[in-house]
Length: 341
Image 1 (cartoon, rainbow, N blue to C red):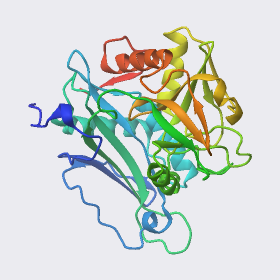
Image 2: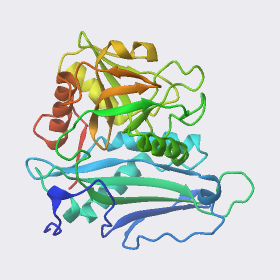
Image 3: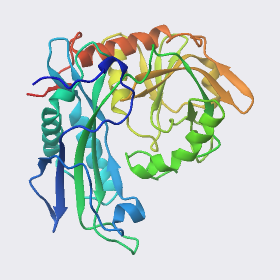
């Protein structure tokens, strides 16, 4: 199939409508067979549960063209598992995990001519999501649901290289203890919108959220987990039951230990120890790792030794190794790469 006539090298990280998407409906206690369709519009009641009470969850992953020309997905089984966990927490029916992977593969395959060529720096972003669709006026879960998958080609998260960013410690809370911070629910991201707009207005790229209970421990940003490098080259990531279990973070921790031979640790990270780390990064699907050069804390600046010019050396090794695995130039652990055939 011929690729679309798109300026792949100059794509932004934004939405471009592709030709096909996947839809499956849940009604009377069961999911239908699902299908690939062309219509990108959704029709629902003005009183649909998703519009009234935000009963919606989602996932995000990417399809890549590897160095040998194959189209692949990176660890979609973990996205399926995480969506199932999110559904259970939000009183939604679980979309079967094998069916999830099949739906993603079908959608990518149907839009294969939108998967950017190898070497362009661009990828095909895949967004599976589910929402309550029937009318609900009393506060309760929906009875009927829709699961959908769409795709959009996106450029690299960073144009011209991954320059370290400056972030701030937020005065807002992202998630409550025993709340929904550990699932990928739309409401978590709605809560972060005012905080991120405020941060951008003040000249910062992102927020660092602290734990809501004590405001002494590092949690995450609005859309990424933290990863720190100690001065003796140990990889540390925050542990909390109110942060999202990032697939990228878990993969980076494995790469650090098994590929680079580094010591790794998942533990509570206190704000007071930020000054002692050598490097800091935000990890997630969009950019893999976004290096942080400086954290602003209410008038005080915490500057990492890695500086504001480029990724720190350990962060860079992690980034290059994981992207090499994703793009096919480095052998992947068993089960990490799903070929779209």
